[in-house]
View 1: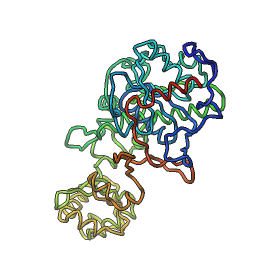
View 2 (view 1 turned 45 degrees about the vertical axis):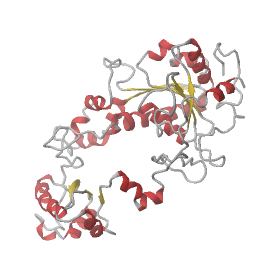
View 3 (view 1 turned 180 degrees about the vertical axis):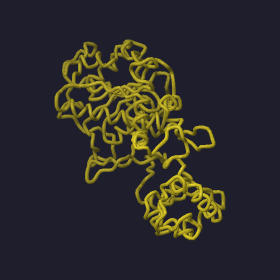
View 4 (view 1 turned 60 degrees about the horizontal axis):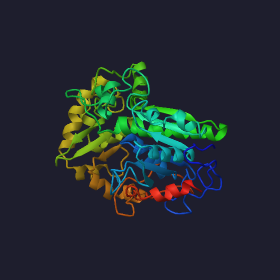
Length: 400
């Protein structure tokens, strides 16, 4: 690859694109390098979905170099989202900082950028600028509204993005306002996670053809995609977009809902299919209260839902959560207690799976996902760096 003129070099030995490169130290051990070992990612900084995407890439074994501004000091911005990365101080308001970013990008496989459209171009760090020196570079861009369209330059956050797609209007109960699950749908599910899909798809093509690409990951696009099944249901006449809280999977169906228990806790019920519904009804002893015999009752029909809810809710409300857990133990009824985070961390199954994995500093956090059979799993997260910890090391590596 050709180097930017600011660096004064013409090759990049010992880097992600060089087959002689050493494995990056972003995983648990030398024998467990991770699936993306040898892939270098430059994270130009940002909040939310961009850092989440690069966290996932680091979890998978990529070497992720995050640029932090000189005014930032101390611990990482987020001890979980920044885990497994390297931190380099770079002032992108100066020519020196821009030159450093360009030099790292020239030796990288992927760049992640979360600025407003055209901001990177004004800095000289747009995809055209960087691919001029690194034609195989995959340039991932994450924004709320996308790189084009009337709202492209509009400021926003997750809540506004899911509101503008119609998704927020679908969430919540029929008799209340729309409810939203923190910033999981826009920022992370529809944003950062799909950005990872995009850049890894681009990397696959770049490895085969030598041609890089630009990934336009808009959170409105991703959030809308997450609702794909419901759009399909609507086309089949099985879902109404104008009937929040009255559909099969949005608390409308009494067999797919959350119920309060006698001790003020909650039980999740998700017995959609007939075998699970039958087991649920029999376990609670509700056969004689059904509007029709269990063997012939079509529980999917909305006309039965009020009557079913009228018998299910009091049966659950009459018992404590512990009593219900004992009652349903060993039963295939798709019932689970709604656990607190502390309870989830202590849950026997979650402990056995290693669902929560503290880093070297004891910071409790979600374990990397997904998992892989055999080598290359990169299971335990590395601690997040202190800001600027890796500046000298990375700069020294640019001269090799």
